[in-house]
Image 1 (cartoon, one colour):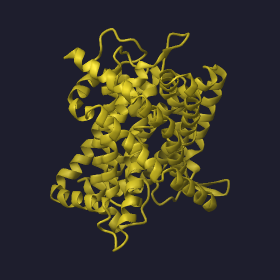
Image 2 (image 1 turned 90 degrees about the horizontal axis):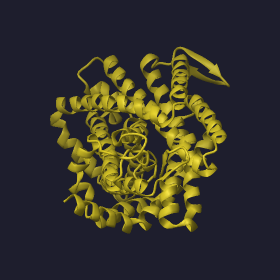
Image 3 (image 1 turned 90 degrees about the vertical axis):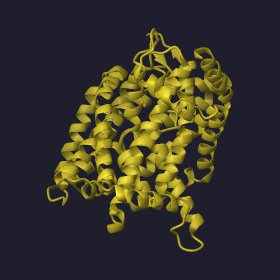
Image 4 (image 1 turned 120 degrees about the vertical axis):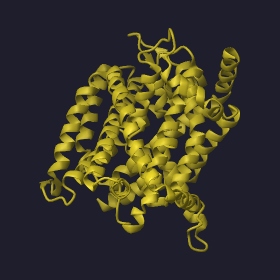
Length: 467
């Protein structure tokens, strides 16, 4: 297993090297310039559209339902565990680079939502289908269909072996175990390794529940997401705000620490650039993992929205990055840095870091603080499992021309991957997720840059019309 983890880490470092980081940021910067900072100028309108339905729009679910489906796949372990692992590996400065990537990523997400609706198609059953593979094929031309297929292949893999399954269920069972059996006293041996009874039971329960909802498809997933996502975001952000306000005097020092660390100011002489690059790499990688701007996942859900206006859905889609990273990830990062939990115990990893921050910062007994975090993580990660199943199924349908047998087989494999996720190591799980994330982003970003002129034209015409 140690050798396997080393190989995964080597591939991860190569995929998420300087070229991909530059490509992702350059795409966001280019789109921000071409759209004249639409994510800043029209954020208020976007938030309004988020909760206001469009009259007479065609699609399967409401715009808010499509957003919640997208948020169900984005707000998950990336916000709770991903931020913690980024800070542990890249220092507090990783949070700064997550925010930078998110601000430019909002423009990227806007374009993804716009193009998803503009180039979506209707299948023989009257369902709206869309995503990067369709705007690559229909926007860039049929000669680029191979690029869309590459995206779809990585989309299937990232759901089956990355964001959708292993990382989510692994984090859920770890959180449940930390709460019910933190000293791992009650264990069973499986294939030569010991696992706690709490881990095993949590894994089975989540697998069964996921299987029941996945069978219902997009409408079932959207319905569950519309109920749980807003409720859990409010609870989680409220907990983080409580920590921040009860330790308000520590906020300036925490912000200063984050900024200094982002530029390697805390590194020893001669190591500043290296420290900055590590901080940037971990921050951007985890940021993309969390908000998925540039990955091309959100437009798959956006294409199902009841709307006739591509720009309007683009605005709604970009609010997902704002909520996910600018709000939720910032809250998590600040609580971790302010608590100083990593300074006191550098051996902490994964959810243990955020749990320690909650126990230190919240004015409740440790059991209550741990329970609140566990509850948020379980629901966030569970809805991510559902959302990514839908994404991957749509990718598979594109590759197989909506072959029902292939979809059924995929669902079985997906549920099986959820079932075995608790028994994989944290390092291997996150490494695999990072690799597929990076590979999935490349064809999508190429398409966004190629179609940036179309996006700019649509945006200009829409705002001229409503003005």
